[in-house]
Amino acid sequence: MARIVMKFGGTSVADIERIKNVARRVRAEVESGNEVAVAVSAMAGVTNQLVEHVRGAAKLYDLREYDAVVSSGENVTAGLLAIVLQSQGIQARSWQGWQIPILTDAAHGSARIERIETGELLQRLSQGEVAVVAGFQGLEPERNRVTTLGRGGTDTSGVALAAALEADRCDIYTDVDGVYTSDPRIVKKARKLERVTYEEMLEMASLGAKVLQTRSVEMAMKHRVRVQVRSSFDDAPGTLIVDEDEILEQAIVSGVTYSRDEAKITLQQVLDKPGVAAGIFGPLAEAAINVDMIVQSVSAGTGATDMTFTVTRADLDRAIAVLEQNRAAYGDAVLSVDPNVVKVSVIGVGMRSHAGVAQQMFRTLAEKGINIQVITTSEIKISVLIAEDYTELALRSLHSAYGLDDA
Ligand code: ADP
Ligand code: ASP
Ligand code: MG
Image 1: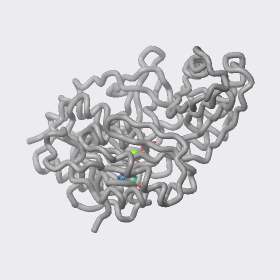
Image 2: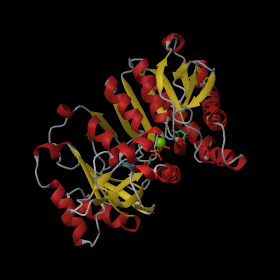
Image 3: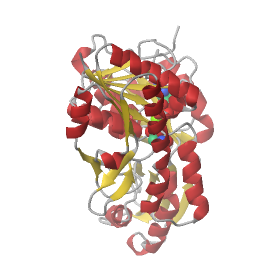
Image 4: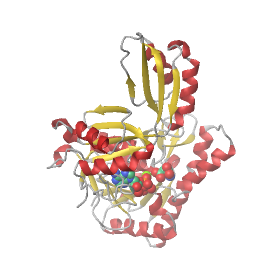
């Protein structure tokens, strides 16, 4: 007997037929003698619709009310799955985040889970009841308000439940049968990975592979949760997320990702003297605007330099406002923006022990006539900023160049 958590995403619960399909999978686990907790997303498209309603209601809105609205999609699926399970003779009960409770901080819209009270869930699981938990939701205890965990947050609900319940596995059921070397919707030759390390998965998620929410991977890594990503529509084995020593032959590059959520800001002719960077980036940090890639060019003795950096597209307008307010810090620099950029990254733990990976990336892009605007690297990844129009060409060319194409 094992204790398992099963997570089902929006497409897996898109209508009643699909919820019945989910129930069949849950029943199979119960009938094998397992204790089962399930985390469910809202039906496909529902959360987007709710977000649109909120934006339509007012341009500026209270995030506590945003959470009250957008968290509701998950309540429907949790209740429906419990009903379908019961109709099949399986003991099941739905749970909203506040009922467990799943306690979070007060960062409405992207709250972090701090603790899950598992007492009652554990007792019911041991009596053979299936716990169907509405994903994406938490409770902020200070003000007693519902929170949400950020888009894609049901992945984190699932992994956090698995960690808190000390489950043997967390199976993430979705519309692809695993984690691929690149987004299979764009790179047709992408290959399914049998295994991927926590570290690589963390980089892939944070650099754009939205198959798992980044925080779910952080949580899995921290608590060593055994996560498997698999399809809810077929029985093909999925992708296991594992420790590095569980992979025998490590490829140098395991994944190529992209993120369109980037906007580039350039300040030309910035004074070149100590304290200027602090004067530019300090106020942005105070406004909670995350700056990602940064390059500063050499000033070649002119006393001025150029500074280029990226922020998320959602933060662009605010970033410009903050920069304009703080002009005193950097002189009469010319400010320009380009929201039509994309960050393409190659990721692999094998980079630690192999030279030439970056060179191959630069050569491949050059051969396709793709200009690199900004470069950043870390131990296991290289990211470049390019014009958005070249996203697909860059992904496919890099995927081939690193020998990742499916034969
Ligand atoms: P769910 O609704 O089940 O949470 P998501 O849409 O959030 O599903 O995530 C699954 C999608 O992630 C896939 O349909 C796929 O297009 C996309 N994706 C992006 N990169 C990858 C990748 N490297 N491997 C697998 N899927 C990826
Ligand atoms: N329904 C939420 C969303 O669309 C959470 C999730 O599906 O993981 O972001
Ligand atoms: Mg998702």
